[in-house]
Image (tube, rainbow, N blue to C red; front, side, top):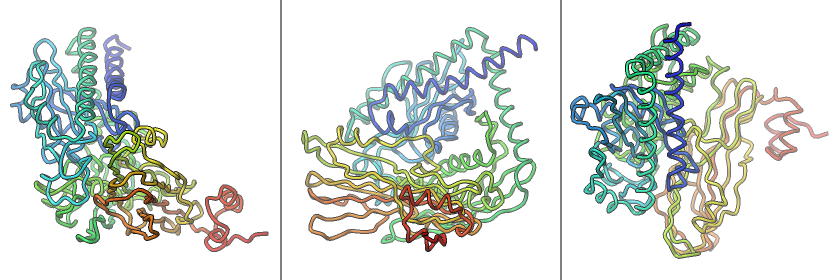
Length: 559
């Protein structure tokens, strides 16, 4: 093997490692638990044209969001000609490459070497606050994007290493918890600088031309891998339809559909015919849709060791203009993950019967956003919890579904530990347990959701949720039963109840009220009557199912 080939391999591995190092740097310097505990962020590198090279990732749905963000910056600043060394651009606008919703704030830094841009360092992180009508900037009752927070369309936060004091002051003034949001923003800058430093070191060691060649070969490698993987997928057209659930008091559910076409050269997802964009915040932009479809595409390809822009060259996405999965300004997108994960789940549903070795039955699907705000009774300070919720995944053709996992859009994110929530916010969590509701029966049963119980310990606390799959349960496969629903129930201290409910905005609570959040059990796979006696009795021993469920669903006879 020639020396130059060795150098290319070393550079390529270094590029992949840089994304991971940026990821760790951001977590270690951030201020918000949603970043350093939950890992709701992503970091990566692109080439000089904005093509994704490598990415360190917590939230799976951020895959593919960095490149259109960088490409918008390149276009806006005259193909990079108006960018200088030390510039940092801030962007969260979902309609110009920001991708998701206003809470996910992106930063972009051009990396110069010998006076020329050789790459871009980029990241995107969920800020606890970006302003808007509701605390946490997560709202389930907005009807236009202007109510959802501060829109940053790609402006210079730093110019030639100098902080833009005007932008800084606008952000600080418009967010409710500036110490967290500004702290996270500065952590993002530090992560960008880490990527810049490492790229420059590579150029100094191997030369800029060798780095460019390695990037080109890495992108080409991604495309070639996908060409081979496409040969392994079933060919033809595959169709599925379902619904996006919003607030039933305001409309919906909203029908969506997909027609997937697979051949040796292309993977086409056609969402035309889906419901038009709506004035409730469950829409996603075309960039948000692209990110989630890319996640599903990767899942179908199997275990590939390269994820970059080259991997997605064979993927085509088609939509109507201004549909619920390709919304345009000013439609609200705060809960955008309901549309984009719902759309990706459609591809899953269409292909699962034909790829049982790769795709399971349906899962909880929703991020199941839980927001609680109010006063900490220990110090009378305001607190804000913004937390995704775990639930059940569907069973596969050879194993039970996974229990207590985030939906496909959240990827490798983590629970906010009970101990941290109680210590930091002064709330009281009575129960955090598996939801053993007996749904999702099958030869292999669906994974279990969870149940969380909170006791409200201060008057005036407010709760908001947006729970998809509160009307339509996760699908079963090959004779397996459907899973259960996500829902919220409020137990008032006077004995009355509110719920079960799927969408709730700023519901005011009193001390002594209790909040019950329950997430779905995944769908089952195969005829329940074929489940082994050993598996049934193990579930009974673990109290995953009741004796009544075992007898009714599985035909179990207690000796």
